[in-house]
Length: 129
Image (cartoon, rainbow, N blue to C red; front, side, top):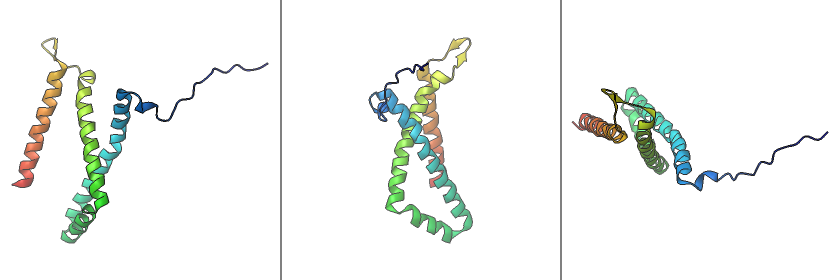
């Protein structure tokens, strides 16, 4: 007796580049690697600061290497993509109701951007004072 097998159409490894929504989904998932890199970079920087001036200078020399600068520039772009896509998805994941009425999605998104600007301004003020 022979076993029947369903036909499985071959799928290209590049299936995700054909549709914008799939492309953004894959890029957002890929952005997590760069978010992790940024966290690691900041933790190493804090460790260098804690170990003293010579360790910090060594870290600054490492951070000034063109490959690290390029990696951080790419990471910044991916983190911006991650932030924008996360903020735009929040209204679907978070239902906010005020007095029994659902808050519109644009209000949730706008409040996140306002919070981002306020926190960025505060951190910039702390660093530059």
